[in-house]
Image (tube, rainbow, N blue to C red; front, side, top):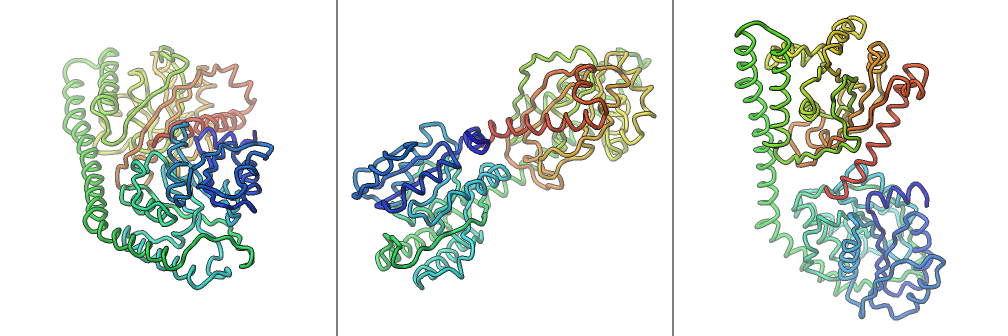
Amino acid sequence: MTEQQKTLRARAICVIIPTYNNAGTIADVVRRAQEQCSDVIVVCDGCTDNTIELLKALEEVPTIVELPKNSGKGAALKAGFEYALEKGFAYAITLDGDAQHYPEDIPVLLRANQEHPGALIVGERKNLESAERSKGSKFANAFSNFWFAVQTLTHLKDTQTGYRLYPLKKLRGLSLLTSRYEAELELMVFASWHGVKLVSEPVNVFYPPRSERVSHFRPTKDFARITVLNMVLCLLAVIYGYPLAIIRGVLTLLRTIYAMLIFLVFSMLIMTPLVHIYLLIGKITEKKRYNLHRMLSFVARFITCYHKIPGVPYSQGNPHNEKFDTPAVIICNHQSHLDLMPMLMQTPKMIILTADWVWNNPVYRYTIRSAEFLPVSAGVEAILPQLKSLVERGYSIAVYPEGTRSKDCSIGRFHKGAFHMAQELNIDILPLIIYGSGKALPKHGRYLRKWPMHLEIGKRISPSELRSYGETLKEQASYMRKYYKEHYVELANRIEQNV
């Protein structure tokens, strides 16, 4: 199995090929699709030629779903989707059995799925305008594109392509109004109404000479069906699609405002006054400082796990049963403002190295300075004596080795500072890997999106083990970045099957 095939399976992606009497091309299309993906499902829509025999004669026989009579492409897709869902697949790439689509473009849809998990990926056929097509075909695509934009307020250049990647769990029960090839348009419209992101990706297309083309399109009857469907969808857009989009937008705005209010209430009206009062009463002792950390950790846990960030369900993995009972340099990838909450809740014995804007923030600078958080811009050498004192008192030091939040949730270059600290303090590196925070609240994002957030606690790495990964700090940083990239992909593959 190739790396690509492994990735497709890890992300629960299969390929579905609906076919009706494509005996001349189906075996080649399936064979080429199997070279790209190990899980290929062929839906034979009441085939009356020798399609079944050709498929069973292949070296690797695909999964075959047979419909007793020809019911149309929509019915074939529905049967394929239902079968794929039963077998645990989360996504399905659909392509036609007439060799118009290139199975070799499956990697394009895979990359788009990795960049836009949960989205419906539409394979936009390249050079469509210059291809040799009938006037009816060109008009039908332009007609479909126009009405799709009216119905969804989303512009796509190719709404009639059959090369797509569907998020199966978002197809709303597959309650289709139509059963033939116009069902593909219907699936996109309803997906858009329910908030599924639509993403276009260019794919290749092959149009054989007119004499060799196999088409089941009936111009008069099928165009009439498309017209009627568009009339119905336009009506539904007014009474259902548009109101649903407005409601979704309002809920997103309310969710964002609510989350901001919770943060402001806890930081300005609860924590800051409470910290002032608590520290002013009596002497500032070690126990008092520890209790301050306990308060911060409790608030972080309360917001993240008990009160919950609206629309952002949180989960955590701790496969190595980490107790946070001995000091370490805790490193974590950085995606969002939300990252801080799941980190703080892990243990009261944690000092965060912050950016200058956090250190100087008028809302909570008193709290974080009282908690002995330190500005990373001061430089490791300048703050090293304070760090040694904190470690001797049992505190771990938490830092983001990337230095800044990632715009696209990718793992950026790791700076050497964290590994220099671990070396100088002679303590373990403890990796935390966070997923989803940057999708829920992206860098420069204005609104809080619904998205799961997960924190995975990795295995401690001792100073001697770290040195085995590289003698220089640069080599150690490079190794850990590779470690994070691999584990982040594993997390994403697992979690994005259910978004």
